[in-house]
Length: 321
Image 1 (cartoon, one colour):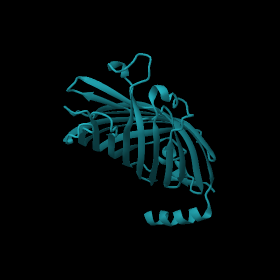
Image 2: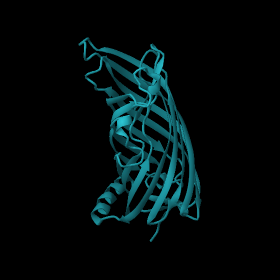
Image 3: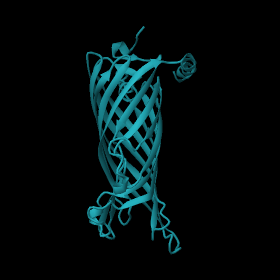
Image 4: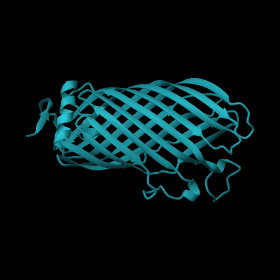
């Protein structure tokens, strides 16, 4: 029997586990302004393409992220250096509330604008910072006001949106990330610890065609604050570390478009994300702008959930209701 909800607007896929494989180019790049010397540094990892393996069941989801060298754009270590990247995430998706938590670590970056520096040899490899490590802990919590709009149908495919609907969705983003150059042979290195909070208010709409095909658009402008501790170290001279603190308001914009097929057994689609964030921190070398466009393509299928999993999650499902 079909699990039809909200007067026919959506269908729950409660007895199935969704297994999904996705590929995306959502790499994090950094644009650093150094005002004291009037130059900029564009830092990129040597990972053009990332892969994720997702497992979704009812309100629970989990995924792991990896960047193998055989994926398109992840080679050429001579020119761009070696990057190691790994991440994982989990989420809780309820009727109105949803929460997403992720952890990622990336080691090895190159300077994309190397031609702006005297040390760069034209035609040679980019200037590289192999010991630069970025560790990121991130979370998002949101609330969908319209119960007839299925967030799950777009994010985890544990539901199917059967009729077109939209919803106002406020969001709270919270993030702690560390940018740390661990090069002991450098004259000076820096580590920045950053805590960021952003509150956003957006609207998302899904247009459904013949129950299985959909097109979705949404945007969330946001405002927040970032707190930064910057530690400058001098490993060669042995001089004492120089520590500074700075705070700054943050402006952020997120846009999202998606289209796909969401059948009862098989689903597939593509997503385009636009993200822009900016804040000002004078006199430091901390990131102050970060804008990117990224895509994701995915395919997945649903398989019958094991009885033990259904029974255990059913208990939790009853408690939360």
